[in-house]
Image (cartoon, rainbow, N blue to C red; front, side, top):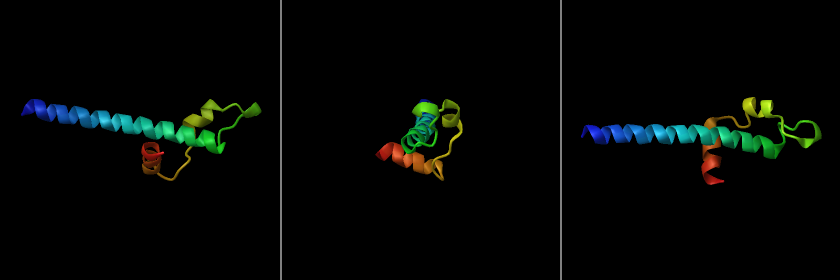
Length: 68
């Protein structure tokens, strides 16, 4: 019983970590597509990609990351 609970917690944490990474990557992907972080000569500005917010909620990033 204890092993089953530990496995459920470990899998839930893994899914949470993957979801957080997916949200981060989808935010950057959408910023590149829209052109929000375009630097000189059309080269992406990496510091902008770390801080840009392209949608109103992280739930939208998760939704589009899973469906698009």
